[in-house]
Length: 353
Image 1 (cartoon, rainbow, N blue to C red):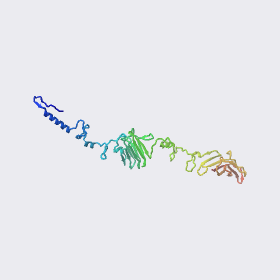
Image 2 (cartoon, one colour):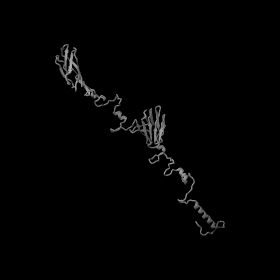
Image 3 (cartoon, one colour):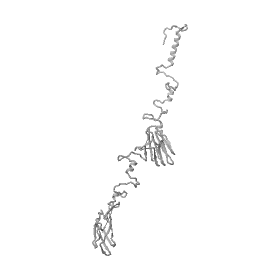
Image 4 (tube, one colour):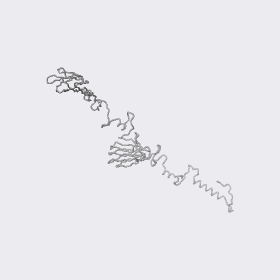
């Protein structure tokens, strides 16, 4: 601003005023402002000093900015606090990235804070670990077993959170038996704990041959090693001494002229054969009363040999019976009363293989 022709001006009281000194003072003011103040539009070549501020709209001096804010590229000498990340792109704080470790000696409650939480009880008796809800998705907790039964439970007994297992079952507690190698893994899904276990593996029911079966499936399909008096157990025919024998291997004909097969690992056929009969059974004759033996067929042939055959008088005379196997298919007998041959009814029993 400039006054080209200074003129005398008359102010309100009627006294004239020379404008030249006013112009000089104003010019000096403008020069002072230009030398000491920043232009409204700013200047890239000029520094601008401000006091520290607490006003969110106020300009911040460099020292305050360096103290309160992190450098854009980071600084190896400066710590940087962040809240727990809740999204994949969020910065993870030390608690989330780190691992909490609890070694309780008595029952207690844990509140997971870190990304991983390990609980290794050192109980002197059975105890309980109560797990509070997680604070972010994917948080993990592992509770190990110890020398005594360890019960792991949620902080509620109904509603959420509960323990959810891969087979679709849910529970509010899980007991780790008194063995060190068992543990339960829990992953927080923002509502409940998703669980798997070691030493007591939980699986969905198997539907293909290479999958693990659940205990429920095993109980329904298989017999326990210790046996079960209320459960039948199907097996193939035994062919070795340490194999279970099925009932079908004890085949028999229970007629008066009959036989039975008894399984045995010591027989080359896998069984011994017992056979029997008596005079009047339709096949076994009485003795002839002479030195000529009576001969009859066994109910079935012995595949290898008749090992022994015995006979008894069926009458009241107590005659003597002589008997022997003729072959693997036939036997013969004689009867005597005293020193004389006699017609005698008798019963017999033979065993072979």
